[in-house]
Image: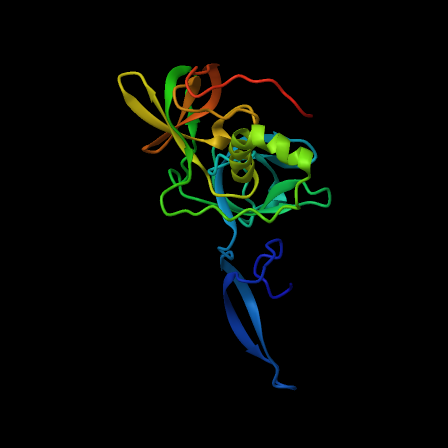
Length: 250
């Protein structure tokens, strides 16, 4: 630690550093001294912007991630690798995400980025209405992993499956994507025949699954030149491809 130029900056495996080499006259041992951090290990680092700074017993706040699928992360001033930097609202930063002893995520090993580096997703206040023109499907070239084998079904289960196979398949598709699979992509037509994509994670309710012809409401999230529909809710279900029936087994 005494060989590090800035003692408050801790080093980690994979960091790029500058240093001088010393040789002990008595033993001939070589070592590194005047070690200075050049660039933190790039693996697993993310980018974001400071959206809240507060001063209590120490300066800290929250960072909004560039990846809008993640929640805002807490940080403390001592998590900065920039000596003596006072965090400011709007600072664009790069950081590593770690979990504390309560498994709560926070940002650490924070460095500053040039202004204009981070692009955050901006969500419209206006609510739009459209019609689903493409149901959720895997992106081109992506193959969904095969489901694990299930145990043999009983006679009653087979009877139940006969009535619910179609519903179960659609529910399973969404369940897999939500927890383990790659994103599924659907499309909505709105306005003057404009088309916008959405993902299942953009649907407000985990239980909702839209089909062709459903009327939905949504907001538009913009990041650079990319747009997609978010906060989707079902306004009116299409009457096509829907059937009625009676539950015969629970």
